[in-house]
Figure 1 (cartoon, one colour):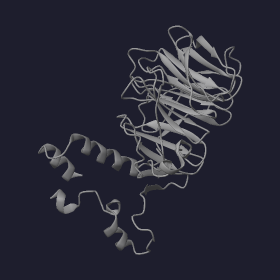
Figure 2: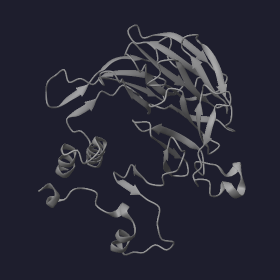
Figure 3: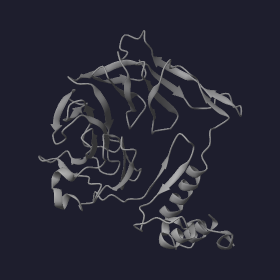
Figure 4: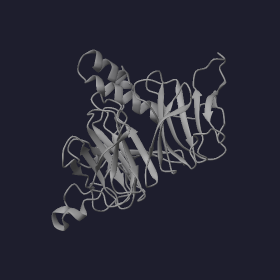
Length: 329
């Protein structure tokens, strides 16, 4: 790591390289925090979490029981070991509580005075944080799976909503109505995410195995349908071969810089895409319930070898990218 710092100080490396190296080091060393606990409020599974981006102090959780809980992550006890307490909750006795499972909660990106939630009860609700009352409710004909507000938008207040319908719906907070729809998917929309880099770019994932990127300003809004084969099979089989996964695509998110898009599906695969070109980068990291973090890379040989040293010679992904003791000098 000292090698990265020295190169940064000397102006030899891009500052982003040091940031990524440190982020990687922290991810690889993650472990359960033994000093910090979260008060248990939900009586069943928790489907969604969101930490507000202003101070990173308050966290929302939405459960399969329809309950929404707001936590204060600050250590007010000033003790080394502490429990983060729930500030308030939308419990089962609340008049505006969701009737069924809450699938997504999200803070309003610019302040903590408002947050949103969507549920299997076919509603998207806008909440006033201070009064814990609904400021607006959007009703849909189909089950709502996901919604998202742009973290960088300054010229629109659109909320993208994915439902059991194959049409992506855009709800306008200013007018209080659904402004327009995006057509192109063939089955239900399971996940939606706005780009953190461009306020009009939206990514959607569907049960039809496809991931699409949209520019919502355009009449024909779809920019590209991501292809896991990077065009090689679609040249032969046509548009029908352009699938992102071999199964339902049930999750996606942009990297913080908006340059890449991460998707995962029921085919037990996660993929990293270049969000500008739509190219499948074919290399990524994954973590699972077994506690392992794995690096994935396509084999450069048609036949695999059990000789690890041979793999290291063949593929740079197996090389140690960290500065050794000699480099730290």
